[in-house]
Image (cartoon, helix red, strand yellow):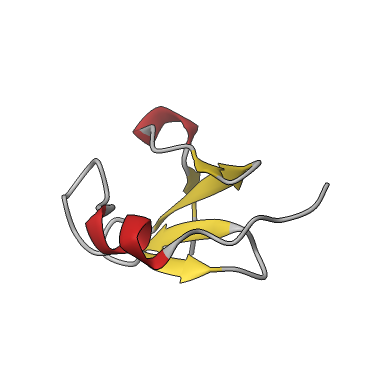
Length: 59
């Protein structure tokens, strides 16, 4: 599956749904990372999956 790069305008408005904090875009991992909550949100076919219950906990 090919990765679609998220547009900057979208990245500028997205926030962590849990803490409302900033997200780091990890293009190589195809994820958005919240360092405060230690959660990673997957991006599937160019669409961020911004559901806390679907997020991956990171160390």
